[in-house]
Image 1 (cartoon, rainbow, N blue to C red):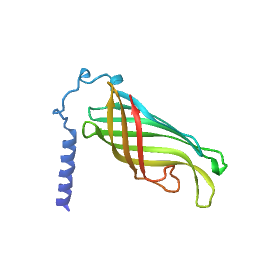
Image 2: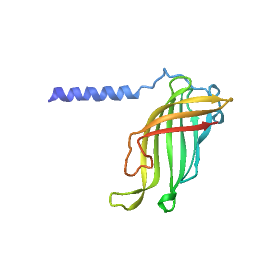
Image 3: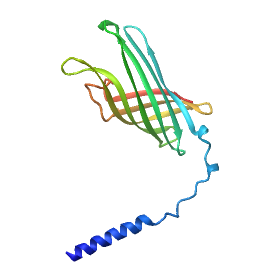
Image 4: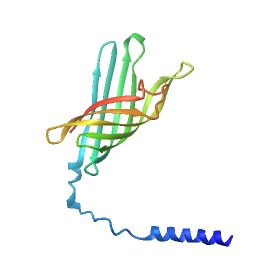
Length: 182
């Protein structure tokens, strides 16, 4: 028992010492090394309109910040309106928000991760119309085509790891998005 106690004491002591040392090998960050925040910010989003037997409107703005040369993070909002004329029912609104991370693996190619939650209507198993917050966890990648000094078009292919075929406003777990950044 005393051997186990002394080994445990030694491990705890080692962990305390290891965690208490300052790390002096990290380089100091000078404020003048990186561009100001306003130069690292970017804005954009998606905008869609469809009219006819199906009316679909999508407005999804976003704002992000370049944290390093290759990594950015940001927030976005979504509003969608959809109406199927042949159903003779009022249209439905979907709204919510998202946070995202993006890592540039090559000059124009990026990996994308995103958590989104949308308030959407759905028909439950008992054919009742319900409204609920539906989460989504998207992973995937995309391509960014720059134009001008700061702007560009991006297209991404994402997969929803939390896809719920009953409640999700998306028809399938794969989502293809295209949008503008400036």
